Each structure stands twice: as structure tokens, then as C-alpha cells.
Image (cartoon, rainbow, N blue to C red; front, top):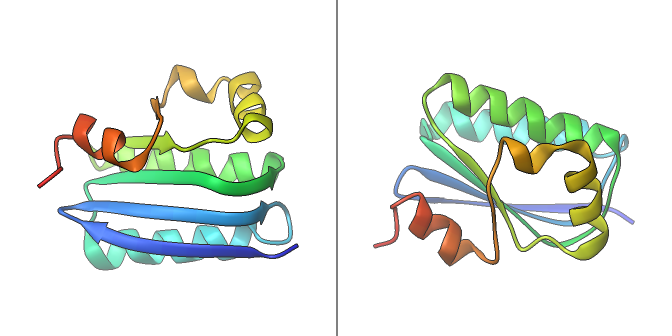
Length: 117
């Protein structure tokens, strides 16, 4: 299965929606597209929506952690939302939720980042 990536900017937040599989075959593409969007738009925060992500491996974790570090160094925050059970389990086992908040949906994530219009 392939990976689809949809990005939207909302009041200084890069919203990234991933569908499909984030693995060693697709992680470089996601990394490059997110880095380009962060640099081009000067985003303050990132919301990563994983509602339609069916699979993720350690390469995907690396992409998420790398973008977290990048936005954190700029003084921003990164949040994850809409995580399905198999991906949630991987993120939980990795300890990601100790450094990054998880929300039920994009609206809640944006509300917590105080950027809802």
C-alpha cells in the first residue's frame, strides 16, 4: 500500500494528514515534504492526524521524532490526533506520548494549541 500525505496550514500550524503506510519505503518522502512545508511557511506548531494511517514502522517513528525535534527547537509544539489502535500501540510503546500530547481529533488539538478561529 502507498502513502498519501495531505498538508494544510491554519494560523501558524502545519496540519499533516497521513493515509496508508508510513514505513521505510515512504518515510523519506514524508520527511522531505514536511521539512519543506515547515521551512516555506514558517510554522509554529504541527498537528499530525493519523486517522487513516494503517501501518507504521520504526522509520515512521523516526520521521515523527525528527519533526518533533525540529519544531521544538523553533519553540513550537507538535501534537498527534486521530490515532487508530495498532498505530497507537506502537506510539505508546515507543514512549512518544511522554513527550507529545495526543488528542481525539484535529479540532481538540488545535484548541489546545490555541489556534482555533
